[in-house]
Every structure is written in C-alpha cells, then in structure tokens.
Length: 244
Image 1 (cartoon, rainbow, N blue to C red):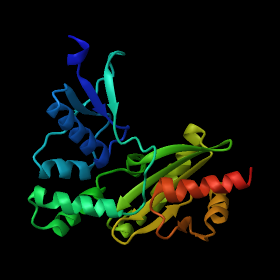
Image 2 (image 1 turned 135 degrees about the vertical axis):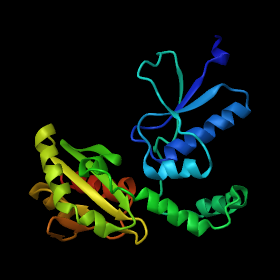
Image 3 (image 1 turned 90 degrees about the horizontal axis):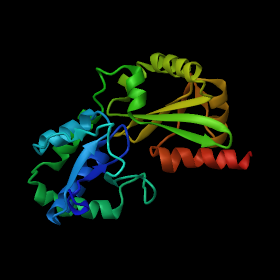
C-alpha cells in the first residue's frame, strides 16, 4: 500500500469524552470527503453521555485502537487541549449552535440538552474509584505530585451521599501509589457549582490558602470554578509559584 493510501488514525486522549469522540468522527468524515483514507478510533471505553449522543444520531462507536499499531502509522491527534480553552460558553459557541441547530432536525433543543445532562451524570452503576477515574489527570507543581479528578452531575446530593466512600478510596490510592496529594471536584452542571473533596491535611492547607476558602467536613466550596484547567490548575500554579 502506498503512503497516499495509508489509513490516517484519528484519535484523542485516553478516557475519551464526548468532545474527543465527536471531533474524531467529524474530522474523519472531513478527510474522507477530501478522498483521504481515514478512520476514527477510541483509546478507552465510552461514557454514558457519549453513548447517548451516538445513539441519538444512529452512529456506531469507534473501534478501540489496537496496542499493536505500527510505528509507521499516520496519526491525527484531535482535541488535545493545548490552547483556546474556555470555562464558559463563548459567543462563537452560541453562533455555532444557532447555525447547526436547523441542520440537526432537532425540534426541542432544551429537551435534548436535559437528556444529555441526565446521561452524563448517570453514575449509579459506577464504583467511587471508577467515577474518580472518568476524568482524572496528573499535575506537577514545583516538586509536588498532584492528581485531580472531576465528576459532573445533575444531582450533587446523590454524589455527596458517597462522600465517605470517595474519601476512603482517595486515601487508599495515596498509600497504594505513593501519591502526595489528591483532589476530587463534584461539579453540578445545572447549578454551576463546584464542591471539592479534600482527603488530607496537606491538601486542605493548600486549598485554603490558594482559593481563600474554608474547608468544612472535608469539603471546599469552590463556587462556580468549574474548569479544571482554567480555574483550578491555574490557581494552584499561581499559589505554588508564589511560594517556591
């Protein structure tokens, strides 16, 4: 097979979310319309929100990418989060929705969004460990190693009922993997509210000082700070830089 006919593999990061999967599928279709051989793949299991979106438009899940991928494989990495992130909906986002809405043939956008949120926050069958790992990343601040997860929900009370389970699992992971600090933010995507679980004294000291908030019963109310990159990590980076 010539290089011109080699398949381009469209993928995103591990623990794929809806953005990753849909962008990979859309970019694959774009390349194919340009007569370029391409195919979208996934690097992990899909969450309920993504399954709902694909089912709504009658599309199959992308295949899992094989671990035996050749070194010569051409890869297109999509939605890699390097820049142009925003914690809120932008005017460009609104214009895009207005343009795409008629094309979607969806007569009730609000109903669809509510169903989307319900699917996104349906974590009833998940263990606390699996919930934390759905959106979980590692960060380094100076010489400190932090892992920070986010769980989005339409019903924060349901998540908070499992608070003790979350905290126990977080502390067990710290011992198991020799991790210094872990945070887990429970984000209500309807009420736009962030309550972050604090498993230990070290994390509590940093969160109190960095965000200028109180920590009560292992919970820090971070208000409307929903974006991990723009509103959580940036604050922690500023704190550690000022105390280095």
